[in-house]
Length: 421
Image 1 (cartoon, rainbow, N blue to C red):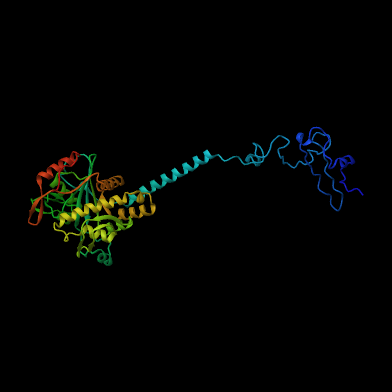
Image 2: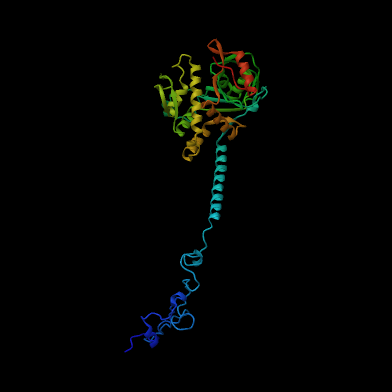
């Protein structure tokens, strides 16, 4: 019985296992391949066996016998790992990744997302500004100078506060609202200057147009405390009174109440401040030890409102207010807040909801104001009280000569040399 496959001849059997007598190894010329024949016939039949030729018609392996579309590359001189071989992605119909195109698409996508987010944030923030103060109602205004002047007002407004909030923040329950602090911030090319206007400053109430009635009220030479102007007819009369008594043009108005102030501090995660001397005040709720510490919203409000714990009362309080507001602006303007959306958006939301500004205030103006206050805190500017020469009837009287020089330097955007001593 013949055990050899049917398609093999005797000569082939004779050569099986004996090697090749040819002087040149056959494998070095052409590698043999096997071609399968048709599938086995059904119901028993003898399948056709593969034939073997050497690819050149001389016997051996038939390189057409195993032709199912796969080419291992040996017949064309290709080997694995070479271009065009099986390791080339194009051999399987997949082009090599175009990294330059991918980088371009990714960059365009990121830039688009950034632009859309920035534009959306701008319109969201702009819509939240409470532009309630109309400075066009202010009459007989002085000539505008160089730089930009902001009148920053902290009011004792309790609007939106619950009874529990009032108790927690030690604000009391007085009706209406008054100015608890007033400052002029001058932003210019020769250094920024922050000037506190003591609420007990002695000022003359000039002629003005009522913000609600539109009626003109003639000035009578009446003198009163500065904060009385706000209580009498609101922001417009306060601006008119400051401009009349200083001769300095006010470009923008910014006001914040008790609750808004505390909310901003909490949103930014507290404000670090160095308190040089311990003090306590039952009326404001202040109870501070000396040293560097981080204040939350409740503690911050107590810090800026305290006046009875100090010898110079209102003057010492304004110094603390300057110090704290500059530190707050410095905290808001840090990369840790600006680049962290989980801190930036709550801080912006709390601040914008709480601020009352003039109708011409833009987000750019507001940002400029905060960065200027940050500069003052960092030592790039100057902070001071309005120069005082004495008192009259319990009111603080400004030093007219120093005030005149100070206003002249601010109008001309010169470096301020006037001191408050």
